[in-house]
Image (cartoon, rainbow, N blue to C red; front, side, top):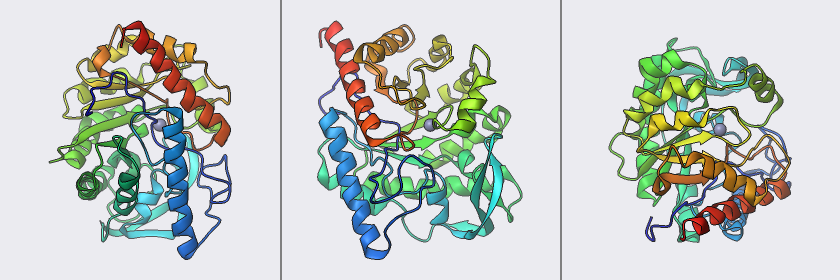
Length: 344
Ligand SMILES: [Zn+2]
């Protein structure tokens, strides 16, 4: 951060796409354009996502995932060794069925996936840029593997490919590379066995900052139903934070607002930067700035203020554009309340 701004705001990842690009308010929404028009449409959508964040006063800019259909499968579909035409239905995150690509041979990254998009966004803003990639474990949990027959082995292969992509994103001027690992909140034994090691392999040699996002998922029915089964205290982070704390990852992105996560679990990653989710992505109700400030304030006992990064609980792809814009503004206004309280 060049200006040493306190409480820099950012979104976790996705924003709703314009309706002319993909039908709104659903996941895996199909593109409405094709060929050169699709390429142009994606770039226009990137411009809009950037402007939306600029207008709302967001400090760290994301691409809003405007050029990808889904935060995991789009990356997988760009690799060789994957068949994404004959998809299979599998249960992902131990929770819901999804139509996913199939690994049919050795996976390799023949060409960059998001690097051109990152260069394009880099030219349009002076602000720091954060780019999200799927984490290795979440990737293996969002496909059907007909080749490696080992989640660990496949995750390790993905980690190497993610590292290639991450290095090129860094060279394109990305300031923070974030790996999305919602699967970390489900498969604790695997995280501790090999998931965290694979994630660190993906970040190997990076000089830019790195983040891991671990959440309770998009605001879709399957996730909301799952949350209802988790009881009055969600202690999933307790299982994995010690491993994250011991890692080289700089930033931890977590879900806080309207969640049953005991906030004192944040103490387990003391010293890391923490992207505190102060916006609920599972409701259309727009938070007031005071509500955002309350959530941020309540975490200050467990995270030093210079490490507090106000953010959203998860991606906002399934929301309407108006709701998402309102939530972005609330995030900035809430952060501003706390800055004022601290005389900044
Ligand atoms: Zn998430």
